[in-house]
Length: 121
Image (tube, rainbow, N blue to C red; front, top):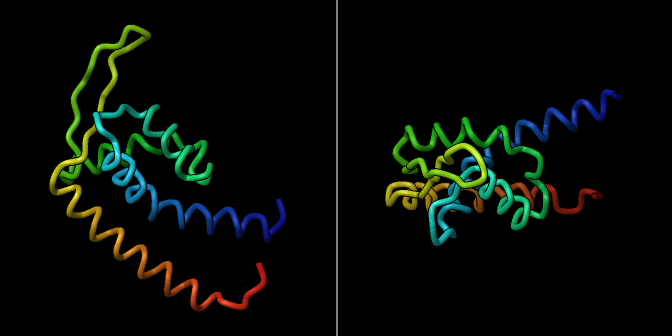
């Protein structure tokens, strides 16, 4: 791996760390029913254009942290196809935080986009 590739990988990891919680809350806010980890990961892949693909194992600690902060509720459901599944649903407090984080994300994105204007892709 070249230095440039290593720097890109590090930058992508730093960006991902700040966006996974936001995207998890957004996916759960759009869901009509509680979702378990695998379904959350699949929805992230579908709506995220694959940007967050392959990060399923990283989702579980974030889901636990969001639940610990009161932003998600969870319950365990039996499964016919394997072990019981922990299903997550966003709380009212989670929806409030999501609105704040989404506004902060959009303001940051717009600011960075304006600075990057004219930089070759």
